[in-house]
Image (cartoon, rainbow, N blue to C red; front, side, top):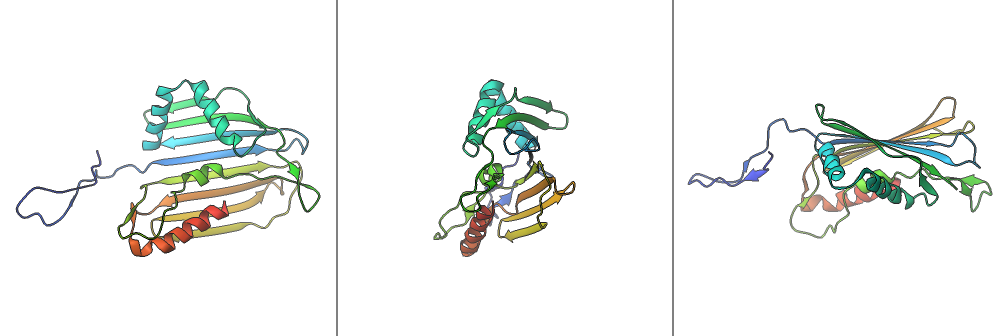
Length: 232
């Protein structure tokens, strides 16, 4: 087990002693969201969410599955995405693959989204939003920068969200890359078109760099974290 830091009771003790387990695994989670809109703007969009959880994240998934029926978990996930896609409904049962030897759990959810495309208020055409909901929720909560003690942050964390949008016709878009790296975290974003403009792929990755932020760094940390949230 990883006990963090501890105070050794001895006459020559001058500070805390690290009690961390050597070579501890970094919890990793990767979510791939496929939004298949290739049937046209009038058709329902097929949404497939594949979540791969490794090490401690896999254990967390097992714990959740052990206390709830799969159908209940599926409904909870659907209700979560309904906050972003009101016209969503389940398209079959969730599939769970558990590889205990590799300590990896893969879940697959399938949905249909009605009304994915909406009338644009200004341009007069149709528009849609591919929400980075899972990344937004994975980011640490904002906190006040006015404090005199270090701010604890979840660590280690390595979370990647890949959002793939399949289109019914070719689009034009310049590839984009962005990185925000400051105290305690690094965020990377990329977006590009593939398959002659018929497939848009966006990759967002958040990695924690430390388990706390010093008081003097909080202002800059909060500003960059807020910038990251605004980019999603």
